[in-house]
Image 1 (cartoon, helix red, strand yellow):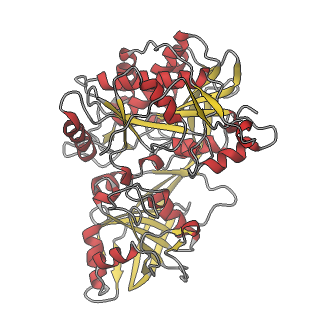
Image 2: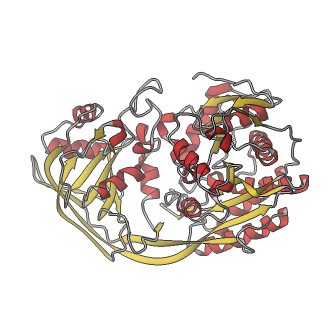
Image 3: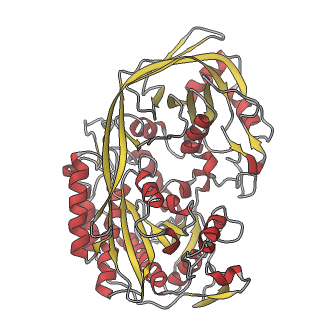
Length: 565
């Protein structure tokens, strides 16, 4: 993987998101020098250990674990020196619906060649409903293989072209058609996953097409996680955004099947999954009816509740109505599929007690340094694990206007790998925030490395995405993988061990023997970037050609808008 470091200086001639950009002027991007912050490793350890303790029961939204988490975060935010961020309140209510499926019938596949297949729940398939129905029934729904399930008019790509999906179930490949490419060139950004590759998009599109069901074929490499993650994440209570009065169209059942199971289904249909998957990667692919039907049923317990985002702010000294955002999600999975030893609490120590602790540690350091010129916002969001629901609710109902939000930094899961020679940029080259990163790195003897797994689509899988898609430039960084001790091989091994053995499972637990050196280096970097943005006069924008730039430009150009206007 190519590593790169862009030369950065205090002022670079680049277009900014102020109105001078619309006038065709080229202005200097202001990146002031800032002093390092006083960051506490003790704070990081203390907050992470507490949030990851069994006392918080895995921090699932809408549980006693949430109540304890919110109370604790308010206490820590106040202790760090923050002020309540929501008009005198520390919290923003996020209306959610919790749906818990139970009494699952097998997923029955009938017709075609061979005997009827009865697929066991959890072992062969998992499924949920997004509908607030106490009983879910999928009966004799025709299966249609729709390739990657993408409808992208701007790319001239429509896997549903000519189909009437009413009453039918879409069978869909995970990721997008460019998966497996060696470069970042291709209609779907080559090996880098686009939003069209995310399971959230595939279910949404199937609903828009009128499908009764949507089943994604799980495959570890393009999914970027094993079946154990799917089983754990998709069983038990599931939180969703409240549908409201005019909900978007939804399928009755959304689910996954194991790839070997899918191969059996296609064989029963007289088809070859491998050959059809290859065909689906080509533009002009036509969906294939499988001549089979799917049936299943289950009941649902439904509970409505308001979860909470926690918001703290350090008001700015000169431009208090301009905001720099720091985000991390406080939630995790609660009680989940038990480990062999019977442990059923998904503590989420790395994911994301560490990121939440970072909000506290950064707030503490900024408060000790005194007010920056712009206001610094610290937002701990709920329901990230359910589809970025808390972040999306905030971005749709912002306490601080998005056209007054300069940009931000998202922190999601610090791996305890030790000191690294690099820092990983997830989604490099998207915005001018990369230049603030380069400036912050100048004295660190570290380099930036593009995400080593762009095919996993991580830029679309964390809370910053809710802001990015609404135009706010957001930086998402991971710890580096080129470790001081062991190099890239050691870094890759740490990431693989976590992904395979602890991610979204009961063994993501706090360890008193963790090496925090790499995390503290990353935290120092986040502090510098946040402080530079807060003391700057510039409004960094998305780079030309980026998918989010038009939204930001429109927001900046609106009458009475922000972006320095």
